[in-house]
Length: 68
Image (cartoon, rainbow, N blue to C red):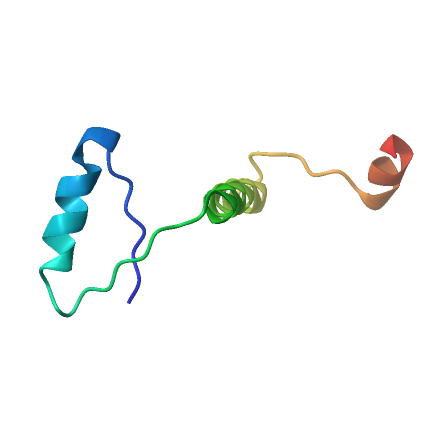
C-alpha cells in the first residue's frame, strides 16, 4: 500500500526521521514535477466526480472546438 503525506515544512525532518526508523516503511522524495503532476491529477479527479454528480456542466465537443 502506498500513501502520500503532506507535512508542514518545520516538521518534515522529524517525520522523515521517524518513518526511516521502521524497516517496513520505504521513503523517497517527490520531484517538483511529480508534485505538480499529482496536484493536477487530483484537481482532474475532483472535476470528474463533480461532473458525475451533475454539479458542473460539461462542454460538448462542438463548444470545445469553437473555443479553439
